[in-house]
Image (cartoon, rainbow, N blue to C red; front, side, top):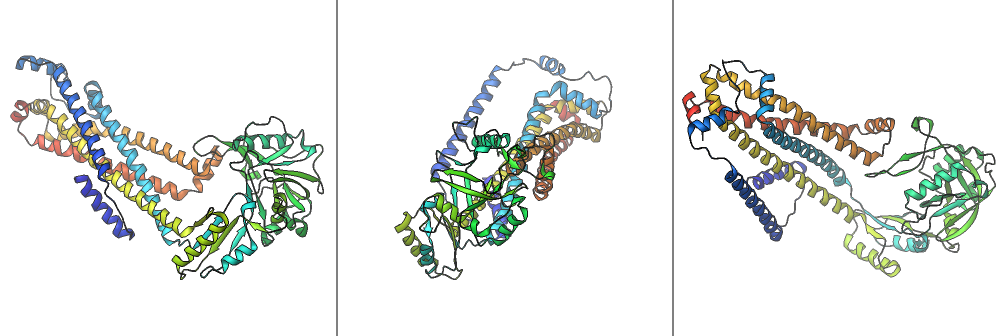
Length: 546
């Protein structure tokens, strides 16, 4: 009940600050299942404690109880001021298991709190971004160009009230196909540059069987360059080292641009190690790692015809220009005009596009427009490949709200549970030591020194707990950074950190928040029991054992 009330209070604050609408649904079956699971856990726990009590040795007299108790205490001959060193030694000798359990719980709480706080900050930031994105676009996309839509279809869609314009492009993607796109030339048969690139590209794209030898490049995707991309074509013109770019021949699909740039084999995997060729420039190379450069005895020359094979067909194309610099637009091996993809797929008689975006007006009648668009594509492609980005953005915002709510609930539950565990543990431990506290008071140790004694006991634990928790959180952040940036060396790691300083500051704030909150809870849960026990008289502390 306390957790539910705290979660509702925090959620109300988040709702008022962010201005979001929260929709919830009570699923009684899930509640009953969770309640039943908790009841089973509690029953097993209490049964385990009862069995432990039954196995304990029962003392029959105060003398025997005292002898058993004195075996675990230090031999005190005179009152001495306890230092951090003596308290650490005392704890390690008598309470090693309790300290380990408390430290383990604290480290887990710090890690969970830091991670959830960081994810809360990221989700809240992403929600603010997506809240401003309207997504007034219809997007049609299919990996097969032969299933695309024509110029006539695009014009008919633009006649629908509310549709403003169309943005389109062509590409081929071999995902799910048994064959990849290959680019071959007889002169590449003994080329280490080509063979290495092809081998790692096959492994990266999970192509089986992997060819040990081959005079060709392999690609999973190839995109056509539109004649309207004047800036990109001008960049090709300036970067060509051998030959020249004939724009007319390039746009007609008769010539191509070949990229033979230096590359390194780099790990670009996410949560797994996944190596593939990565084009580099001199500043982006990784030291002590081999750089593959195209330096052959019989290099390919402009005007040479190369063979391009794909699941949709095979065609030869003339090499117009060769670029040895790192690509600026994400190209892989080759750049071709859109018209070449039509010829490769055998659809030269019509102009098809398989990636088309239809922006529409904010003032349009969404309901009628959605119906019209759905009816049009249902007659052509059974509605497949068409998405409404407005609906996708709404789903993203809803998912982010759910993530925010989940993080708030987890953080609240963890901190409340940690508060209860630490308070009960510390109160029970100090109640067990009540007689010892009375004896120390009898020997002349003041209440202030006793407070310091127990505070020292927690001081060194806090240092260990904070260091271990921060180390685990840092390892998690480095793993998350690798998933996002795929660094695979110290140099690329530094570049990834420098380019993600915002994430780094959010992470540092999250860890600091988790440490401060956990330290505050620990301080409260030790301060209150110590103050309550020292409030008693010496005789009460000595005689009251329960």
